[in-house]
Amino acid sequence: MVEVDQLVGVIAAAPSPRCANITNSGRTPAKNYRATANLAVFDNGIPNGFRYPDRQEDGAANSVLGPQAKGYIQVDLFVADAVAIYEKRKEALIYGWIEYDDVFPDSPRHRTELCATVEVFADPRAVPQIQSGEGIPIMTLRPYGKYNAYDGDCLYQPGETPVAREGELPALTPPPLVNQPRMDI
Image (cartoon, rainbow, N blue to C red):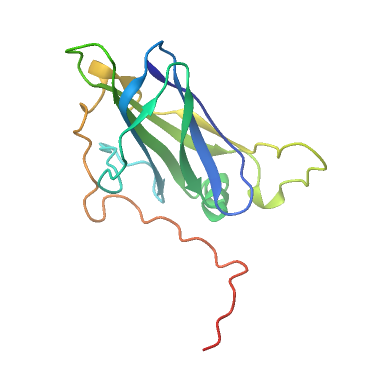
């Protein structure tokens, strides 16, 4: 079984990587493994009836996650959005799915869905300088909604995740133009 261990990350400069740590807890490989994650930052709260659509068509190549192996899915959250979440002006979801085949003949394809809200509990503009070691985490992810399930309990079956219709998801925050080289032509 492929499991989501935890959702981890620290806000640093823009963007801040948020990762869902993935572990194949089984003793056989997860074949034809595919995974994706999406970020949606909402101005007026998470809409009722949210469909959890992917931002784009799944373009990931199939891969293998070996027995007891670990992997991750990364989503980038920009500091401007983290500040808006901290100030309660926006709400954010990180959600996605994992699909794979096991090695047993005639076994159905497996799916795990994951969804969490982003909570920022300290001002990202005022993170203290760390003299040594890693940064201090100032945000966490909390499981959210019905999009946390596996196999038959999932909202969607393998291969059925909808792609967002135009305007269904808020636009992503563009990255800041920091230290961009000047080009004189």
